[in-house]
View 1 (tube, one colour):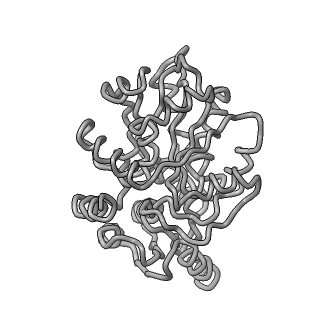
View 2 (cartoon, rainbow, N blue to C red):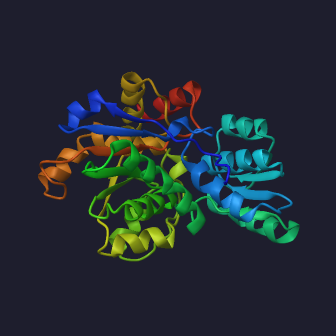
Length: 322
């Protein structure tokens, strides 16, 4: 029996969000994972499969994937090296070090850090832990949909799933999970912020696109290119993915509303998904006929996030509300 590093997270009903959209809203609280985000599902699974005999792991991440890799490595008793871009908040660096990881800062964006992680994997024989682009990650993330299905019980399924997209790992995991439980007819609303919108750009262009730069404050959504699998899902007919964008201001307002109403602080990446409810986007999609007027329960993946605290929140307010 494999020991799991992730926990079975609560599925909560939000009265205030349900009122806003006119259907029951369920929150899958991935913020309550031991590392603060959903990432531990996939990364824990991958580490157990690939790093058992390893001399150590290396992961490139400005936040949640690094936290998950550091946590899994600590539990497995192997060293972890986390390569972060300079945009990573100091509190993340501290948390990574608290997990016992060696932290190196390379470059301005994730792509720079990733190049260094791949180099170290090669030269020092470390196990490379990709933050979002690997089938074992998606398999691990899929477990959250299996949990939702078990919580809701037979005969109940979501009318739609709301998910934030960075590199596309969670999106691939959610789709894999929907396929596993036979819910392929449930549409997925894939949310990004303007300026960290590599998935939306690819959907619009009909091919993978590499963004010039990440200009959004949602740094954890900051991959310049979405993983190929996520793009392939957007082009196939077996699942419906609706790709939508919100502004940084809308994501921040969603974080603040969620903190007030649900007493939980999440990061900007997660705010992108929450903003679909708070900004009226769900009603707009219903008005456009892209989601049914009589919508079944809405499942919101509260992906969490380890790169936010009150100081970071007031920095964001200062930057974005001016």
